[in-house]
Image (cartoon, rainbow, N blue to C red; front, side, top):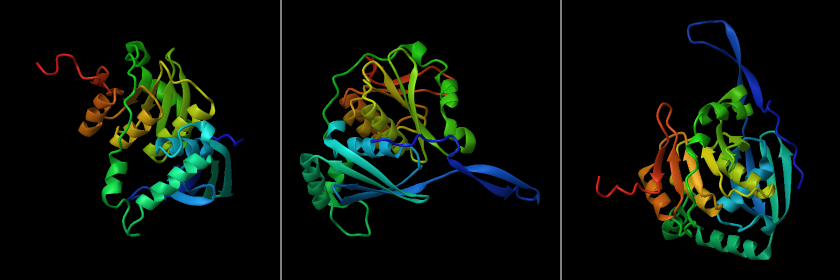
Length: 271
């Protein structure tokens, strides 16, 4: 499943003038495209994504949504199209394809809504297996990490407007960085890259440059990532679910020490 590597120049230059001035400037703006995703020729979703690392996204999107259980469930990925319209055609195992079709039937509803009824609540608040639990990363692996992230974000360096998800291994080295206009998409791309490159996440952690919402937790737990670090504070519900599912959840503030929200502090009840 070869894929052309993303170029740091995945952006376009546009002219603008500052309000009150007639002098023209140029800025690099992030690109995006519509990506239609299908499984065994059955259309499943259309997502707005940054047009790079699309195979990583297709794999991570499938894993993160629970539509496949393993990279081995995907037999082939065919990326088609150019410019603002792309397709990701996945050939998956018959077992996974049956589950995808069942989910489509459950979520069928009014075309004007996004998620409908009780089944939609089940999807938004799914039953997930708890992780086995893992030690917290050493403090030194988090110190200075904000500065190191900037060195990895090649696309955002040109245009901004991009979220990033990174994997830091057990030695504290940044192994992977994936960027996208969508924070969910960036994590999907990272999960897909870990699966495609068969990188063992044991002892490492994922970092997202966005706020940490419940959907990101779902993806991390399904991918078996033991520790999730975010540059923005998590929501209260995300902390509750992280503790329930034994996911280490850490917020990395700008000017203070890392804040561990999960596991809960041992003296929390007496505080």
